[in-house]
Amino acid sequence: MEYDVIIIGAGASGIMAMCELITAGYKVCMLEASGTIGGRIASIEGEGFNGNIATGAEFIHGNASLTLELLKTANISYTAVSGNMISIKKGFWLSESGNDNSMEDLSEKISGLKEDCSIRHFLDTYYKEEKYKDIRKNTQQLAEGFSLADIDTASVKSFQKDMSNLNEDDYRIEGGYQSLIKYLFENNRDKATVQFFSEVHNINYHKNEVTVHTKDGKEYTGNKLIITVSAGVLQSGDINFNPALNEHATAIEQLGFGSVIKVLFQFSEPFWEYISKDLGFALSDEAIPTWWTQMPQRTSLLTGWLGGNKARKASQLSEDELSALALGSLSNIFKLDTRLLKTLLIYHKAICWDKNPFVKGGYSFNTLKSEQAKKILRGPINNTIYFAGEAVYTGEFQGTVEAALVSGRDVVRNMIFE
Image (cartoon, rainbow, N blue to C red):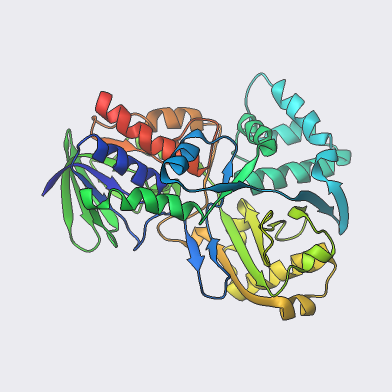
């Protein structure tokens, strides 16, 4: 069977593209390498956890208009994240993290730059002296933790934009992002051909003619192709193109794509409430530096977060080693013996997104070459092969589900009206 459009990837971007294409009357085939939808929108229900637990994307950051519009259509509610954001430095608990003016000074210096540069180059130029050691450390930690950035290649101008978004309100979706993706998928799956466990390894193409080969020996033909896999998969070379890509291949390599580890600890009780009743986020200088509760919902789940190059290195550790690293971090943050924490720990899981063979990382960050790379990738090859996903998005919601959804919608609109 020949399709109008083949979509590779059943994540947020791919499913959004599928919905748009079906609405426009196209015959669609979606190929997904794993056995489920969502990609980096993934959750655990059951095992040793209480309720549905997000192992990937968890928050809506700011006024994500398309996401909020889709939630309204689906009649899915969401709740503002609350709780205090506390900084813990060298074992000392500080007040709300907004009392440090160094980030404001840093932002002003970035604004004064005539040309963009890497975060590392910026710090080496303006904060090289020993007295700025803490600013350098805090900046790197923020860039790695929030943006998953490699400071040697990440754009400092883009980092500044990310910092400006830190004060935006955050929200959690009832049932997690999975509830939204499931709604979009279930409303359209009977109108498209969807093939799970279909890992693509080869793409042959000419103008308005594409043949996609999967590792299980099947092939699918169509007039056009939308590729929504992660930048990590694209950069890995797991998908071969014939003929080989030229400027698009270079552009793919110029995208930034960071690593992340998410640690989930289900305790028997929320022990942190004895110290801080309204703890939302704890930002520390520990091995697993960032932790958050489920505030305003009071639960005994604590989530740890490690991003950037430190996460890439830590991804080589075993589950037990990561658990020990996380418990040690909590022990130092809350000044509690690890043996006590172990007695309170009911269940734990560490999700290393680098190890997921169909994702190979967390989400994208902007390098010095990303702007031009994205311009190339947002343009089709022979009006036949199109790229979509959060990594090729160019708006203010870099690295988010909103970015993936918008990219999936826009690639179809560009295809239709080209």
